[in-house]
Image (cartoon, rainbow, N blue to C red; front, side, top):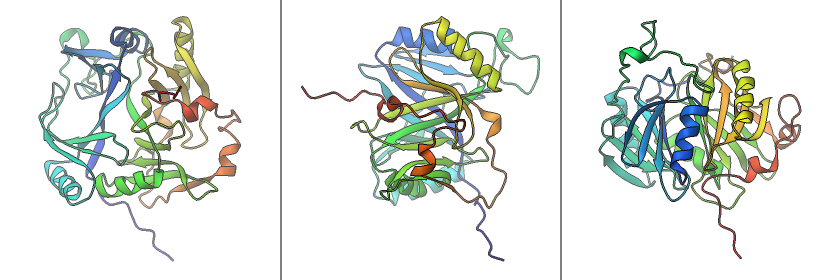
Length: 324
């Protein structure tokens, strides 16, 4: 019997946070707190530190005022100080762009920053600030970081980030070298290119995605996703969006790839935000082999036949400036 290699112990623990840029700070902050239902940990300078009610860290979404939109950086917490040393050594030995060590912020200690081939900035860190709930936000249960609340949608935790890149295969090579995450599923196009690739550093089926850039941009964000408990939470979210004038791009529906129930919307500045039910997506098989989806497979649409709309392939942030 052929033995399939098993998954090595990963150096990355989980996706920690993303920093999202907005040129409509007050409106975006109102969306993420009142409508989306994230909790505000702190305001400092041009940034708001936000978290979902079960995120154990001080911040999972850093919202920063800017003259543009998109993503400023993606932060991963590593599994140990030794894991951080191993990852930094691998990155330093590579030909990829390195920013080096930076001081932390309100949510974590010093971090090592570097870039993917398309200009997205990543950071790895170990020292973190765990959220300490004040009495009014403490849960009745000792094993929760804070109490569940009924403000807006109230997602449970951050789930994943999807980035746009001109060459998904080049992104995969970068992940292999710099992050050490495994591939769980990918799209193989008829022209030989990868249309998208899904990566995981733990037993979730994915926490990072690269989708092929088809809008002519560079270093853009496709979407950030937070997890709900159930499909019903996502149906409720659609009603909340409707009543608050939020642009629903597509869904609710079920993905074919990864099998999650989804809802995509644009927050006021135009950044795409997804909700997905997280419980459907765990990989317990240590010898998991990547699932390959063909172009023919994808033309069938989503799991129940919904066709992928055009803006899902072309819209990203920041928007691409059109030539006159």
